[in-house]
Image 1 (spheres, rainbow, N blue to C red):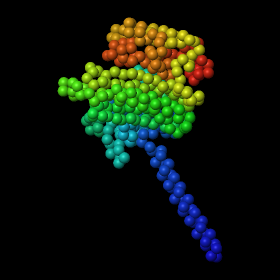
Image 2: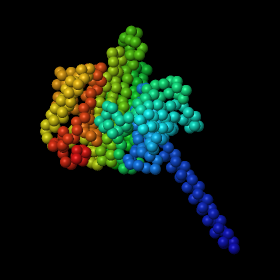
Image 3: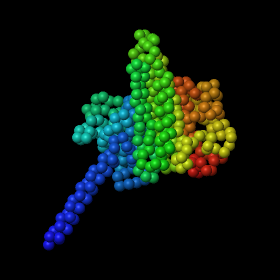
Image 4: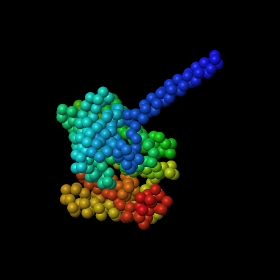
Amino acid sequence: MKNNSRVLIFFLLVAAIAGACHKQEANRSQANNSTPAATEAPSGGESQRGDKFLFRGNIANLSIEMSLVRDGDRVSGTYFYPRVGKNIALTGTVNSAGDLELTEADETGKQTGVFKGKWQPQKDGPDSALAEIEGKWSRPDGSKSTDFVVTQQPIGFTSPLRVFPKTIHDSSKEKRYSIDAEYPEIQGDSRFDGFNREARSLVTKDVGAFKAGETSDQSGADTTPAETLNSTLDVRYEIRYATDNLISVEFTEGTYERGAAHGNSLTTVLNYDVKNNRKLALSDLFTAKNYLSVIANYCMKDLRDRAKRDSDSMIDEEMMKSGASPHADNYRAVAITKKGLWVTFDPYQVAAYAAGPQYVLVPYSALKEIIKPDTPIARLAG
Protein backbone atom coordinates (compact mmCIF):
# COMPACT_ATOMS: atom_id res chain seq x y z
CA MET A 1 0.00 0.00 0.00
CA LYS A 2 2.88 2.31 0.88
CA ASN A 3 4.49 1.55 -2.48
CA ASN A 4 1.28 2.45 -4.32
CA SER A 5 1.06 5.75 -2.44
CA ARG A 6 4.65 6.58 -3.30
CA VAL A 7 4.03 5.83 -6.98
CA LEU A 8 0.93 8.02 -6.96
CA ILE A 9 2.78 10.89 -5.31
CA PHE A 10 5.64 10.52 -7.83
CA PHE A 11 3.29 10.81 -10.82
CA LEU A 12 1.50 13.79 -9.30
CA LEU A 13 4.84 15.58 -8.86
CA VAL A 14 5.86 14.82 -12.45
CA ALA A 15 2.53 16.13 -13.75
CA ALA A 16 2.84 19.33 -11.71
CA ILE A 17 6.38 19.99 -12.93
CA ALA A 18 5.41 19.29 -16.57
CA GLY A 19 2.45 21.65 -16.26
CA ALA A 20 4.63 24.41 -14.85
CA CYS A 21 7.21 23.95 -17.61
CA HIS A 22 4.49 23.97 -20.25
CA LYS A 23 3.08 27.22 -18.81
CA GLN A 24 6.55 28.85 -18.80
CA GLU A 25 7.15 27.76 -22.39
CA ALA A 26 3.77 29.17 -23.47
CA ASN A 27 4.56 32.47 -21.78
CA ARG A 28 7.95 32.61 -23.53
CA SER A 29 6.32 31.80 -26.85
CA GLN A 30 3.69 34.51 -26.38
CA ALA A 31 6.38 37.06 -25.49
CA ASN A 32 8.43 36.15 -28.55
CA ASN A 33 5.44 36.45 -30.87
CA SER A 34 4.61 39.92 -29.57
CA THR A 35 8.02 41.49 -30.18
CA PRO A 36 7.05 45.10 -30.96
CA ALA A 37 9.38 45.83 -33.86
CA ALA A 38 8.99 42.45 -35.55
CA THR A 39 6.46 42.20 -38.35
CA GLU A 40 5.18 38.90 -39.66
CA ALA A 41 5.42 38.89 -43.42
CA PRO A 42 2.23 38.23 -45.36
CA SER A 43 2.11 34.79 -46.91
CA GLY A 44 -0.52 35.70 -49.51
CA GLY A 45 -3.93 34.23 -50.18
CA GLU A 46 -7.01 34.02 -48.02
CA SER A 47 -7.03 33.02 -44.38
CA GLN A 48 -9.61 32.91 -41.63
CA ARG A 49 -8.45 36.28 -40.38
CA GLY A 50 -8.31 37.94 -43.77
CA ASP A 51 -5.53 39.23 -46.02
CA LYS A 52 -2.31 40.49 -44.47
CA PHE A 53 -0.53 43.66 -45.56
CA LEU A 54 2.76 45.19 -44.48
CA PHE A 55 3.11 48.95 -45.03
CA ARG A 56 5.98 51.39 -44.57
CA GLY A 57 5.73 55.15 -44.53
CA ASN A 58 5.63 58.29 -42.45
CA ILE A 59 3.55 60.39 -40.11
CA ALA A 60 4.91 63.86 -40.90
CA ASN A 61 8.68 63.19 -40.87
CA LEU A 62 8.53 60.21 -38.50
CA SER A 63 9.02 56.76 -40.00
CA ILE A 64 6.38 54.11 -39.21
CA GLU A 65 5.63 50.47 -40.05
CA MET A 66 2.06 49.23 -40.17
CA SER A 67 0.85 45.62 -40.27
CA LEU A 68 -2.84 45.22 -41.15
CA VAL A 69 -5.30 42.39 -41.66
CA ARG A 70 -8.23 43.24 -43.94
CA ASP A 71 -11.29 41.02 -43.68
CA GLY A 72 -14.13 42.47 -45.74
CA ASP A 73 -14.80 45.94 -44.38
CA ARG A 74 -13.00 45.23 -41.09
CA VAL A 75 -9.36 46.16 -40.57
CA SER A 76 -7.16 45.40 -37.58
CA GLY A 77 -3.48 45.29 -36.78
CA THR A 78 -0.67 47.32 -35.28
CA TYR A 79 1.82 50.03 -36.13
CA PHE A 80 5.03 51.24 -34.55
CA TYR A 81 7.78 53.81 -34.83
CA PRO A 82 11.11 52.02 -35.50
CA ARG A 83 12.85 54.49 -33.20
CA VAL A 84 10.56 53.39 -30.35
CA GLY A 85 9.76 49.79 -31.29
CA LYS A 86 6.48 49.52 -29.39
CA ASN A 87 3.38 48.14 -31.07
CA ILE A 88 0.24 50.29 -31.02
CA ALA A 89 -3.05 48.45 -31.63
CA LEU A 90 -5.32 49.45 -34.53
CA THR A 91 -8.95 48.63 -35.31
CA GLY A 92 -11.31 50.11 -37.84
CA THR A 93 -13.14 49.84 -41.14
CA VAL A 94 -12.68 50.45 -44.85
CA ASN A 95 -15.57 50.74 -47.31
CA SER A 96 -15.82 49.74 -50.95
CA ALA A 97 -14.62 53.19 -52.03
CA GLY A 98 -11.46 52.79 -49.97
CA ASP A 99 -12.38 55.26 -47.23
CA LEU A 100 -10.46 54.08 -44.17
CA GLU A 101 -10.71 54.94 -40.50
CA LEU A 102 -8.47 53.32 -37.89
CA THR A 103 -8.51 53.97 -34.16
CA GLU A 104 -5.34 53.40 -32.19
CA ALA A 105 -5.23 52.45 -28.52
CA ASP A 106 -2.58 51.96 -25.86
CA GLU A 107 -2.09 48.84 -23.73
CA THR A 108 -4.89 49.91 -21.37
CA GLY A 109 -7.37 50.25 -24.22
CA LYS A 110 -7.40 54.05 -24.10
CA GLN A 111 -7.82 55.67 -27.53
CA THR A 112 -4.72 57.67 -28.44
CA GLY A 113 -5.21 58.58 -32.09
CA VAL A 114 -7.17 58.20 -35.33
CA PHE A 115 -6.06 57.53 -38.89
CA LYS A 116 -8.44 58.73 -41.61
CA GLY A 117 -7.49 58.24 -45.21
CA LYS A 118 -7.91 56.50 -48.54
CA TRP A 119 -6.90 52.90 -49.26
CA GLN A 120 -5.99 53.05 -52.95
CA PRO A 121 -3.58 51.73 -55.60
CA GLN A 122 -0.07 53.14 -55.43
CA LYS A 123 0.22 56.26 -57.57
CA ASP A 124 3.98 56.58 -57.97
CA GLY A 125 5.21 53.02 -57.60
CA PRO A 126 6.15 50.23 -59.99
CA ASP A 127 3.04 48.11 -59.36
CA SER A 128 -0.47 49.56 -59.19
CA ALA A 129 -1.68 46.27 -57.71
CA LEU A 130 0.05 47.28 -54.48
CA ALA A 131 -1.84 49.46 -52.04
CA GLU A 132 -1.18 52.87 -50.57
CA ILE A 133 -2.94 54.59 -47.68
CA GLU A 134 -2.80 58.36 -47.50
CA GLY A 135 -4.60 60.75 -45.19
CA LYS A 136 -4.49 62.44 -41.81
CA TRP A 137 -3.55 61.25 -38.33
CA SER A 138 -4.93 63.13 -35.34
CA ARG A 139 -5.69 62.77 -31.68
CA PRO A 140 -9.15 61.39 -30.86
CA ASP A 141 -10.53 64.93 -30.45
CA GLY A 142 -9.24 65.92 -33.91
CA SER A 143 -6.32 68.03 -32.66
CA LYS A 144 -2.69 67.70 -33.73
CA SER A 145 -3.74 66.70 -37.24
CA THR A 146 -0.85 65.77 -39.53
CA ASP A 147 -0.33 64.02 -42.86
CA PHE A 148 0.53 60.35 -43.15
CA VAL A 149 1.22 58.02 -46.06
CA VAL A 150 2.16 54.33 -46.08
CA THR A 151 2.83 52.04 -49.04
CA GLN A 152 2.47 48.29 -49.22
CA GLN A 153 5.68 46.28 -49.23
CA PRO A 154 5.59 43.41 -51.79
CA ILE A 155 6.65 40.56 -49.52
CA GLY A 156 5.98 36.99 -50.64
CA PHE A 157 7.86 34.70 -48.27
CA THR A 158 6.39 31.20 -47.98
CA SER A 159 7.00 31.06 -44.22
CA PRO A 160 6.22 33.60 -41.47
CA LEU A 161 9.55 35.41 -41.46
CA ARG A 162 10.05 38.74 -39.73
CA VAL A 163 11.19 41.90 -41.48
CA PHE A 164 12.77 43.86 -38.65
CA PRO A 165 13.69 47.53 -39.21
CA LYS A 166 17.08 48.06 -37.59
CA THR A 167 17.90 51.66 -36.71
CA ILE A 168 21.01 53.78 -36.25
CA HIS A 169 20.73 57.05 -34.32
CA ASP A 170 23.71 59.24 -33.63
CA SER A 171 24.40 62.92 -33.06
CA SER A 172 27.19 65.23 -31.99
CA LYS A 173 26.75 68.71 -30.55
CA GLU A 174 30.45 69.38 -31.02
CA LYS A 175 30.53 68.40 -34.70
CA ARG A 176 26.94 69.53 -35.24
CA TYR A 177 25.40 66.56 -36.99
CA SER A 178 22.57 64.08 -36.50
CA ILE A 179 21.96 60.68 -38.10
CA ASP A 180 18.71 58.75 -38.41
CA ALA A 181 19.10 55.59 -40.51
CA GLU A 182 17.16 52.37 -41.07
CA TYR A 183 17.83 49.09 -42.83
CA PRO A 184 15.91 45.80 -42.97
CA GLU A 185 16.90 42.60 -41.21
CA ILE A 186 15.09 39.39 -42.14
CA GLN A 187 14.70 37.10 -39.16
CA GLY A 188 13.62 33.49 -38.89
CA ASP A 189 15.78 31.77 -41.52
CA SER A 190 19.57 31.59 -41.75
CA ARG A 191 19.37 31.62 -45.56
CA PHE A 192 18.95 35.39 -45.32
CA ASP A 193 22.09 35.97 -43.24
CA GLY A 194 24.06 37.01 -46.32
CA PHE A 195 21.44 39.56 -47.30
CA ASN A 196 21.35 40.90 -43.74
CA ARG A 197 25.13 41.42 -43.77
CA GLU A 198 24.99 43.26 -47.11
CA ALA A 199 22.13 45.55 -46.00
CA ARG A 200 23.83 46.37 -42.71
CA SER A 201 27.18 46.97 -44.41
CA LEU A 202 25.67 49.27 -47.05
CA VAL A 203 24.12 51.58 -44.47
CA THR A 204 26.83 51.49 -41.81
CA LYS A 205 29.48 52.26 -44.45
CA ASP A 206 27.60 55.37 -45.57
CA VAL A 207 26.97 56.41 -41.97
CA GLY A 208 30.69 56.10 -41.27
CA ALA A 209 31.58 58.14 -44.35
CA PHE A 210 29.12 60.87 -43.36
CA LYS A 211 30.54 61.09 -39.83
CA ALA A 212 34.10 61.18 -41.11
CA GLY A 213 33.25 64.16 -43.29
CA GLU A 214 31.86 66.24 -40.43
CA THR A 215 34.12 68.57 -38.44
CA SER A 216 33.78 70.82 -35.41
CA ASP A 217 34.43 73.95 -37.49
CA GLN A 218 32.44 76.79 -35.91
CA SER A 219 33.17 79.40 -38.59
CA GLY A 220 30.05 81.28 -39.64
CA ALA A 221 28.05 79.99 -36.66
CA ASP A 222 27.16 83.52 -35.60
CA THR A 223 25.64 84.43 -38.98
CA THR A 224 24.15 81.09 -40.04
CA PRO A 225 20.41 80.64 -39.32
CA ALA A 226 19.83 78.25 -36.43
CA GLU A 227 17.84 75.80 -38.56
CA THR A 228 20.81 75.36 -40.93
CA LEU A 229 23.56 74.94 -38.33
CA ASN A 230 23.49 71.13 -38.26
CA SER A 231 24.27 68.57 -40.94
CA THR A 232 21.89 65.63 -41.17
CA LEU A 233 21.77 62.15 -42.70
CA ASP A 234 18.42 60.37 -43.06
CA VAL A 235 18.33 56.86 -44.56
CA ARG A 236 15.05 55.10 -45.41
CA TYR A 237 14.26 51.99 -47.41
CA GLU A 238 11.51 50.48 -49.54
CA ILE A 239 11.23 46.78 -50.27
CA ARG A 240 10.61 46.49 -54.01
CA TYR A 241 10.53 42.68 -54.16
CA ALA A 242 10.99 39.96 -51.56
CA THR A 243 10.59 36.21 -51.98
CA ASP A 244 12.43 33.14 -50.73
CA ASN A 245 14.91 33.42 -53.61
CA LEU A 246 15.25 37.12 -54.42
CA ILE A 247 15.19 40.41 -52.52
CA SER A 248 15.40 43.94 -53.91
CA VAL A 249 15.58 46.91 -51.53
CA GLU A 250 15.78 50.58 -52.46
CA PHE A 251 17.60 52.87 -50.01
CA THR A 252 17.11 56.64 -50.12
CA GLU A 253 19.71 58.77 -48.36
CA GLY A 254 18.66 62.33 -47.64
CA THR A 255 21.58 64.57 -46.71
CA TYR A 256 21.87 68.17 -45.64
CA GLU A 257 25.19 69.97 -45.24
CA ARG A 258 25.10 72.82 -42.73
CA GLY A 259 24.62 76.22 -44.31
CA ALA A 260 23.39 74.84 -47.65
CA ALA A 261 20.34 76.25 -49.42
CA HIS A 262 18.68 72.82 -49.47
CA GLY A 263 19.39 69.15 -48.97
CA ASN A 264 19.87 66.42 -51.55
CA SER A 265 19.01 62.77 -51.97
CA LEU A 266 20.85 59.74 -53.30
CA THR A 267 19.30 56.38 -54.15
CA THR A 268 21.09 53.05 -53.79
CA VAL A 269 19.67 49.60 -54.50
CA LEU A 270 20.57 46.21 -53.06
CA ASN A 271 19.52 43.30 -55.27
CA TYR A 272 20.29 39.97 -53.62
CA ASP A 273 20.13 36.41 -54.94
CA VAL A 274 19.18 34.42 -51.84
CA LYS A 275 19.38 31.05 -53.57
CA ASN A 276 23.01 31.57 -54.60
CA ASN A 277 23.85 33.79 -51.61
CA ARG A 278 25.29 36.73 -53.55
CA LYS A 279 24.69 40.37 -54.33
CA LEU A 280 23.52 40.93 -57.90
CA ALA A 281 25.07 43.48 -60.21
CA LEU A 282 22.98 44.72 -63.12
CA SER A 283 25.40 43.06 -65.55
CA ASP A 284 24.68 39.67 -63.93
CA LEU A 285 21.16 39.70 -65.38
CA PHE A 286 21.84 40.03 -69.10
CA THR A 287 23.51 38.20 -71.96
CA ALA A 288 24.09 41.18 -74.26
CA LYS A 289 27.05 43.48 -73.71
CA ASN A 290 24.91 46.45 -74.76
CA TYR A 291 22.31 45.86 -72.03
CA LEU A 292 22.85 49.39 -70.69
CA SER A 293 22.05 50.86 -74.10
CA VAL A 294 18.80 48.89 -74.24
CA ILE A 295 17.77 50.14 -70.79
CA ALA A 296 18.95 53.70 -71.46
CA ASN A 297 17.12 53.94 -74.78
CA TYR A 298 13.87 52.89 -73.14
CA CYS A 299 14.34 55.32 -70.24
CA MET A 300 15.20 58.29 -72.44
CA LYS A 301 12.19 57.70 -74.68
CA ASP A 302 9.93 57.45 -71.63
CA LEU A 303 11.35 60.67 -70.15
CA ARG A 304 11.01 62.55 -73.45
CA ASP A 305 7.40 61.40 -73.82
CA ARG A 306 6.74 62.55 -70.25
CA ALA A 307 8.21 65.97 -70.98
CA LYS A 308 5.98 66.34 -74.05
CA ARG A 309 2.86 65.43 -72.06
CA ASP A 310 3.70 67.71 -69.14
CA SER A 311 5.37 71.05 -69.76
CA ASP A 312 5.86 71.43 -66.00
CA SER A 313 7.85 68.20 -65.64
CA MET A 314 11.19 70.12 -65.55
CA ILE A 315 12.88 67.27 -67.43
CA ASP A 316 15.86 68.77 -69.23
CA GLU A 317 17.12 67.37 -72.54
CA GLU A 318 20.77 68.24 -71.92
CA MET A 319 20.70 66.87 -68.38
CA MET A 320 19.02 63.73 -69.66
CA LYS A 321 21.63 63.15 -72.35
CA SER A 322 24.23 63.07 -69.61
CA GLY A 323 22.31 61.63 -66.64
CA ALA A 324 20.43 58.87 -68.52
CA SER A 325 23.14 57.89 -70.99
CA PRO A 326 24.29 54.24 -70.97
CA HIS A 327 26.93 54.50 -68.25
CA ALA A 328 27.00 52.31 -65.16
CA ASP A 329 27.00 55.27 -62.74
CA ASN A 330 23.69 56.46 -64.18
CA TYR A 331 22.05 53.10 -63.47
CA ARG A 332 23.26 52.35 -59.96
CA ALA A 333 19.68 52.59 -58.64
CA VAL A 334 17.83 49.87 -60.53
CA ALA A 335 15.47 47.78 -58.42
CA ILE A 336 13.92 44.46 -59.40
CA THR A 337 10.12 44.41 -59.20
CA LYS A 338 7.37 42.05 -60.27
CA LYS A 339 6.58 44.18 -63.32
CA GLY A 340 10.06 45.17 -64.51
CA LEU A 341 13.18 47.11 -63.58
CA TRP A 342 12.42 50.22 -61.53
CA VAL A 343 15.00 52.88 -62.42
CA THR A 344 15.50 55.92 -60.19
CA PHE A 345 17.14 59.10 -61.45
CA ASP A 346 18.10 61.30 -58.50
CA PRO A 347 17.58 65.09 -58.39
CA TYR A 348 19.80 66.96 -60.89
CA GLN A 349 20.33 63.76 -62.88
CA VAL A 350 17.69 64.29 -65.59
CA ALA A 351 15.58 67.13 -64.18
CA ALA A 352 15.80 70.19 -61.97
CA TYR A 353 16.09 69.74 -58.20
CA ALA A 354 12.56 71.02 -57.66
CA ALA A 355 11.18 68.19 -59.81
CA GLY A 356 12.49 65.60 -57.35
CA PRO A 357 13.60 62.11 -58.35
CA GLN A 358 12.33 60.72 -61.67
CA TYR A 359 11.28 57.09 -62.04
CA VAL A 360 10.98 54.83 -65.06
CA LEU A 361 9.61 51.28 -65.08
CA VAL A 362 11.34 49.25 -67.80
CA PRO A 363 9.00 46.27 -68.42
CA TYR A 364 10.48 42.83 -68.83
CA SER A 365 8.92 42.66 -72.29
CA ALA A 366 11.44 45.30 -73.39
CA LEU A 367 14.32 43.21 -72.01
CA LYS A 368 13.14 39.67 -72.63
CA GLU A 369 15.53 38.95 -75.48
CA ILE A 370 18.65 39.76 -73.45
CA ILE A 371 17.79 38.35 -69.99
CA LYS A 372 19.97 35.45 -68.90
CA PRO A 373 17.79 32.32 -68.58
CA ASP A 374 19.38 31.23 -65.28
CA THR A 375 18.91 34.52 -63.42
CA PRO A 376 16.31 35.27 -60.74
CA ILE A 377 14.42 37.64 -63.07
CA ALA A 378 14.02 35.07 -65.85
CA ARG A 379 10.84 33.71 -64.28
CA LEU A 380 9.44 37.20 -63.84
CA ALA A 381 10.00 37.89 -67.53
CA GLY A 382 8.01 34.80 -68.41
